[in-house]
Image (cartoon, rainbow, N blue to C red; front, side, top):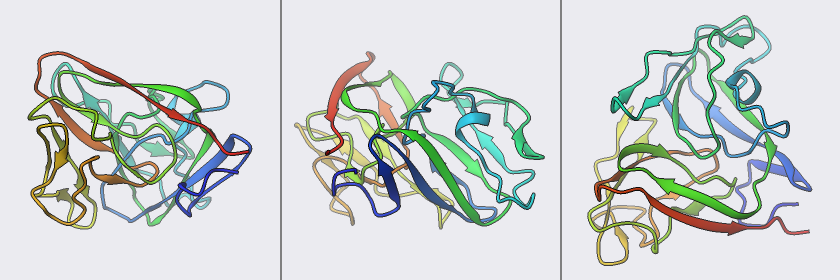
Length: 213
């Protein structure tokens, strides 16, 4: 089983499990893959399955960030007849938007990453997330360059939270707004954030995670 740090909507046997995420019709959700596909296939038809079993999620959309253009990609995969019309790939720990056509539950299935897990914050603006299915403040107080920023998405209001996190003098701070923590914003499994690295260089770090026996 997973350690007690895992949120209540995460269930696992050994290192294979699933994460449930609630979706609301017409409300953009900023998500990530909280698990790695067992077969190593990161195509979205293998990792992000929208089907409620009744076709109600037809015409749901995905939106991916184009780092080089610093804008949303034009691919916009569409869910139709139980599959995405563009089977693009997205890695564990990278954020994307989901626009569901119906209220329901999105279930991610896969392996829990373990051991020493690498992370990277590219220069500029990039959608990132915790790579393991735990509720935790992320990325940690030891990660960041002075004046880096983290932006969190408010699904209910369909906008970015006004209180962004700023890294300065070895800690994160959102100006004392609710949820303030020196380790960064609290992310539930499958949550994503936008990370703004203004240092001019990629910042690499690692985290260690092990599933309790």
